[in-house]
Length: 425
Ligand code: GLN
Image (cartoon, rainbow, N blue to C red; front, side):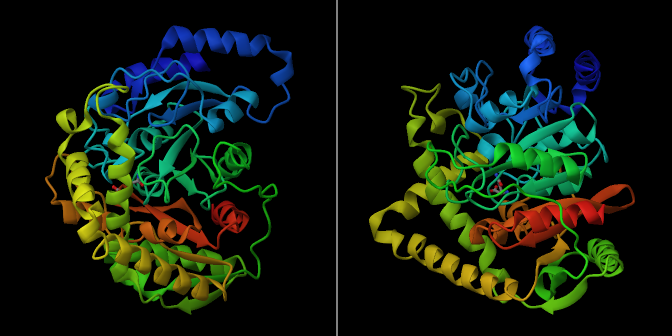
């Protein structure tokens, strides 16, 4: 099977899903795995997994798809990788992403854009573009991505696969290269929702190396009959008609499953992008100070792409004392307001169902302004701002371009999202 996937990766190289694959190493590890009796009964035994190239896997290049770290070989395994390996998984290689996970289209990688296997002339979404494309093109069994403001859910939606962002604190971030550490979370990208549940249960758990993690009981699939399913009017309103149409059909499926549909209103959709990007810029600026050319590769400002540089420069500016009251502190206040309101509307329902992205993916190479690019994130960033969980499942297509349905729930009610994803499928 490994051999088959390796050949397929080679054959479908122009998708540009992988940026570091070491054939000999993978084959050797597969051989060792086969001999390892202790791992035979493990839930991931023999599963072939692709990893976004911003998560440390010992011996692989963790470039974050940036020239800055093009020669950086991971000296250790991230906590999630240790857990995968301890459960019998085989890592097949590192996947492409927007540079330092900054992007929504998969086009800003130093190694070139990823293609969308389901709609070749369209972007695959981002930033976990390679992981979603790899799963979508059947180049692996499952993948890991990271989601700061939608980077698992957005490409899952565009590539017609399943993606899940766990509640903040469910999965350890140790070994993940930070984009904005108060939002970042690692999660699965898979071919079906059952696999997302399986993978989440394996990678989750309290980790002494990440003080924001908490222990949660094993997530079990439960019946969604009698679930109260919220539909937020403002979320539906920002999506284009063709997407809304698909999502409305998706909501009918929940009715048929015996759920009660509840109309909700969330007043702060307009705050989502400014709040998210201000906090993102400040935290990203701080996270990149270590890339000064002394310890890790090149000095980031000298070699990075336009979007990364934009974030560093704006982040630096608004971190300065005289401006922080005006921007950063206000963004933190807005985050609180958004969280409180989200908790309020979630009190009355089990899950919220709606669109993942407001528009269909643009054509590869089409030049978008930063604001147009950020606009993709309006429906995914509220999840991260509020620290709650959300998953995406395929929900039809518009002329062959996939549309994903997003399901959200309260913090640590990941089980509800995962159950709703499974039953929806
Ligand atoms: N598109 C968002 C951004 O550029 C989300 C990125 C992410 O989730 N890693 O910040």
